[in-house]
Image: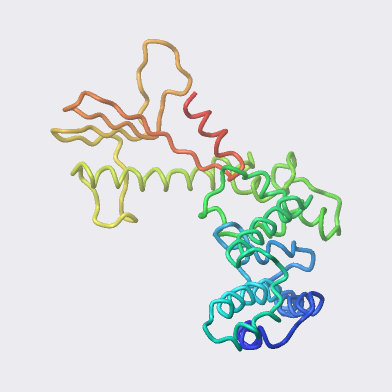
Length: 277
């Protein structure tokens, strides 16, 4: 639909209401085929993917952006007829096309951010989320989502621990019932990958493929020693004295303590502080 409309920009003079109606028509098939929740935030649909949105092109914004481009072209033409024809092009804005696009991006994301329900995760991960954070979707059928949006139930609590609200962040990294099973397995896989990378870098024994690697408690050569899940003897009583990895450089007499945490997006800073403390 965007390609068809682009050919007619500058010729047809659509009203704002007509452009918004065309936007709704592009979203309807997504809702019909379960790709978009009926109550999902509209602004998020048009936010870029690496910012957490769906990356859909807005008909209204595309028309306005191309109108700016066409008007700029006609104003710079040497042909008087083209310059005269360009005066009838309505850009709905006095700013340039790039300024218009940048302003729309900011407004879209701010509107989504300010939504009481749909903007909740965006607010929680503010200043913490990276592009990788947005490679998975938040629309899982949790009890919290059912109670707040669909409302077939009033029970917000986790089906496993029955203690905290069943949000995506809780399921991913906070439920006490799966802390020593699924969470620990994920943690050990990440730690094993780091162990394999260190072995490869410092020429310690390792398998050719990462998925075949099994971390040994102690590995060493003439240059370094690598300890895995090793209980460190200390002069003073320290409760947390079993770090994930310890790399000792024999040449520089330096030691690196490597701690790994698999936390939810909302607890990244908190986990960093815990590990450092």
